[in-house]
Every structure is written in C-alpha cells, then in structure tokens.
Image (cartoon, rainbow, N blue to C red; front, side, top):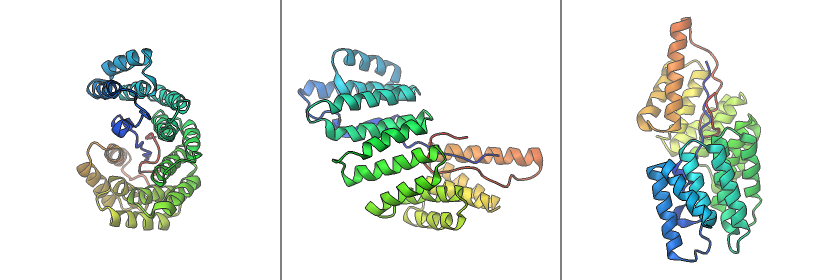
Length: 282
C-alpha cells in the first residue's frame, strides 16, 4: 500500500492574479474590462474561455491575454501547456517597461503549473529563477520558498524541502501550513519525533488544517495506530471534502481497507509525503 500525497497548491482558481496584476500600466479601461471578461468566461467554461483568450492574444492582447489562455488550459487539465504559456507571458512582461515587478509572480504560477504537470525539475528551475529577483517583497519571497520546497519534494529531495521551509519560517515565523509540510519531509527522512513536534505545533496554530490532519494520520499509521489514522483521514474528508488532502485521505482509507480484506493484515509502512508539497499521488 502506498500512502502518498504531494498536492499542488495551484488550481484553476489560484492562477487568477488578483486585481488585474498583469497590467503593469493598463493603457485603457477597455483592456482591463477585456481581461475581466476573459477570466469570467474561463471560469464558466474553460474551452470557450480559451477560444476568447486566443482571439484576444492574436489581436495583441499581450501578457494579460496569455495569462487568460493559461488559466483556460489549466481548467482543461493541460498543465504543461499552461505552464509554458505562463513562462512566455513572464518573458513578454519582462520586456515591457514597468512590467518587471510582476514577473516573479507569473513565474511562481508557471512553477505551480509545472508541478501540476508532474515536472518537479522544471518547476524548481522556474521557482529558483523567480527567487533571484531583487524586487521581491517578503511575502512573495516566502511563498516562492514554500513553492520551491514542493518542487524539491517532487524530486524526493526532502532535506532541501526542510531547508527552504526553514528559510521561509525565518522570515515570517512558524505557520501551520509550513510546519505540516516540514513534518511530512521529516517523516520521509525517518525523523519521526521531529515530524510529530511539527504536526503538534501546526495543529495548535490551526486545529482544522486539513493538510496537518492528513499528515498526522500518516504519522499515526506509520506508528501502527491505524484506528486514529482512520479518524484523522475521515476528519479531513469531513472538513474539506473538495481538497486535495481529502482526495488522498479517501484513497488511503480505501487502499487500507482493501489491503486488510485482501491480505488479512494491515500494511506496515506508509510511503507518502502528505501536505501540499508535491503534485501527484503515487
């Protein structure tokens, strides 16, 4: 039995840039309205939205049109194409006066799309490039460090996961999500006590954190406490039924139950890294 979830933070909705951030210097109100209309169409129907975004792009819609295209591609599950489109939008944005400040955020979105596409190495390259920017705010730097940690996890480099998360927490202090991610990496490295300490602290900060509860279930399973592991995974499903954590929790429960029925025994070793650190369930 494999208990593993490395879930992407990037989803269809999270690729949207708040407040029209792609417009470094919007020339007209109509351009902003076109962007918003395109995003609305993508949200309603990604296929129709992509066609609208493509027409806009072909009429010199620039990075904003490309961002809308990427969102539509993501909505259709075409994550690699979405990632490349976001990278291309970042390059175009970088070439425009006043557009450089938005480039790291676009690259961050591209990296998340590469994670969704299952390409951790490409995601790392993009996140790493974004982190080289000299204009990063502390908040953006922290999120990019967390994102890069997930690209390390996608490549099973758990020591590097911990390093990036430590650097992020040095900037803003401990956060429930970061502690849960780090606990997952510690578990993979066999450092169970450290993993338990991080999960305990993560749940003190946010008792209903689905990722932390999922990881606590993994830890309990690793220690042979199958009943409590069931309890944590079921709680994840109840709290956040649409989340990646819930999907993985449901799968773990189904696999565990199937293994018990098939073999009459419970598998003894979970393989997974739980919360929001990677992009695929293996």
